[in-house]
Amino acid sequence: MTEYHCHILPGIDDGAKDVDTSLAMIEMMKEQGVERIVATSHFYAHREKSVAEFLKKRQAAFEKIRDKSAIKDIILGAEVAIENGISELPDIEKLAIEGTRMILLELPYRAYAKWMSEEIYNIGAEFNLKVMLAHVHRYLEYYSKDEMEELLSTKAVMQINNEAFSSWSEKKLVKRIIADEKRFAFGSDAHNTNGRKPNWDLLKKKVKPDIIGLSDKVLERYTL
Image (cartoon, rainbow, N blue to C red):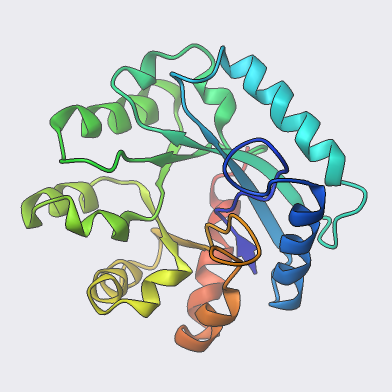
């Protein structure tokens, strides 16, 4: 199984606070059947000096756990917050998941605005990147029905948090997304080992193995 969205790198964002927490999260994932991890630390353009500085920080965090990790197949990426003008950020294409042309973007938790769709489109078109939208089901409480339809009409891959299967309203949306077998990927969005711990055991109870297998194959579609 492939984990597409998590915050396991130590001390870089609001995820794993230290190496011990990071290694414990990875061990939990391994016990739950995860074999490959895409580490997606938060990237907020207004907080970072530059993409280059973020990449140095990310690499340094990864080096702390690489040789000790229970799962060796760890690919570095980022969860890039969509901000107004983000598509014009120098080197944004370097935040794509390593070895691929796929980039994980996170919409803001606020009312929908047209510029959000414009930024998504611009990033994909300008840099030939495949956009993956983080936990799209979380925006049901922020967007109108028509706005959700506009979001779903994009050609982005829809990233689904495993937790969505515990919510009736979110599960309904997720089942609709899964019906399009080429456009979804699962992730735990794990941040720690307690309140936001890896939850692949939940997904395996709620989703058939062949559906999880479709998610696992998404990364290979966009390798360089």
